[in-house]
Length: 73
Image (tube, rainbow, N blue to C red; front, side, top):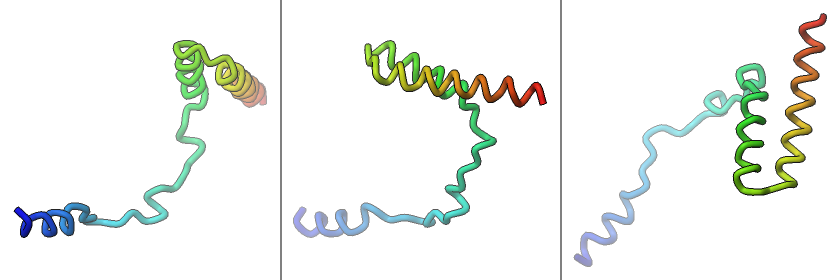
């Protein structure tokens, strides 16, 4: 058992491919922020977190206003 333990520890965390910056590129246009904020508001209500609710509700309203203004143009 003592012989196998170092072998297990040394081979346990092997990474086949390292992520590159292009794999983690953030594209704002691909995210539906309204749905993200709705989900966060639901979580805040479930956890009775008033501060989180206030923060995400403001962000939700800003995003909805931004979408309405973008449609008008």
